[in-house]
Length: 148
Image 1 (cartoon, rainbow, N blue to C red):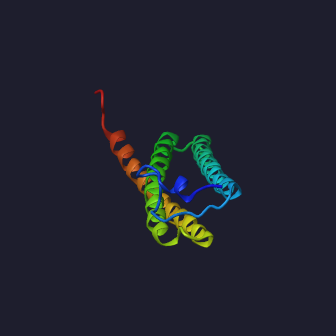
Image 2: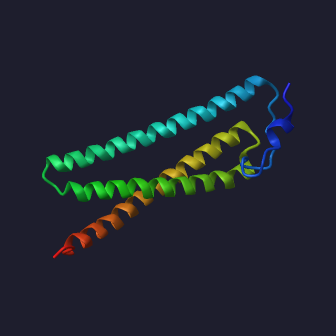
Image 3: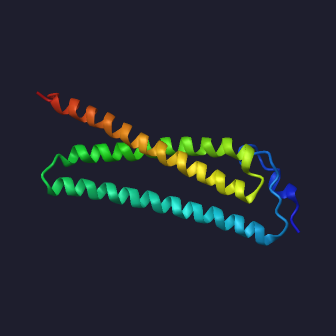
């Protein structure tokens, strides 16, 4: 049988909250581990899917005769800004929510939903910001005669 102390007393920074998670048997530990693996797999899959959509946009721009290099710069910057802001806000929202909600299974579900929602909207804002900034920088640097 597992003791609560085995999972609760970890080095600082490895727990979301100071609340004890009561796990009474190994099946509950396995379920929690599988939840973590599933969330990691889904997150990585969504990153790959997003990158694929962005590559497709750049290829479409190239086929249509548009400025595909600018499009590539904007998509790359949007991916970076969106990812960074989404992770920052999502983790912050989960950290705040975990103080109040992490003691029950329903609280975990609400906490995950809050983190996903906050992270999604922050990443969309970061994507727009990154694309706007990189588009302006690209346009400005394209007008400069660097070697003449």
